[in-house]
Image (cartoon, rainbow, N blue to C red; front, side, top):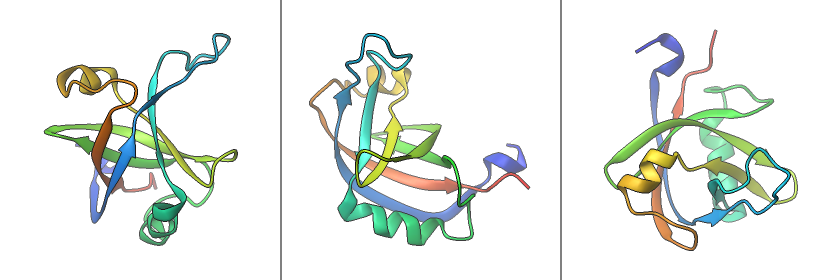
Length: 113
């Protein structure tokens, strides 16, 4: 595991609704996502303080069921929270589809130095 992939010990577990991107003209069309909602976003920001970059996407590990993947949490300007893509292999393995409710555990990847 490279230094950029080292996990911090801070974790946040949330309940999330899975949804599908619907813009046909977008690179993200058809992909599955979840939000770190406003009620959890404050905790997320406090936990990431000093662990990850303050500007731009936040490098995280996300886990649903027994499946874990590397991804980024992106500040969702149209939503009071963060947007996270669900890895297609994870969605398939964990039988996740649009409308699913998922328990997601988030941990932070160390910032690249």
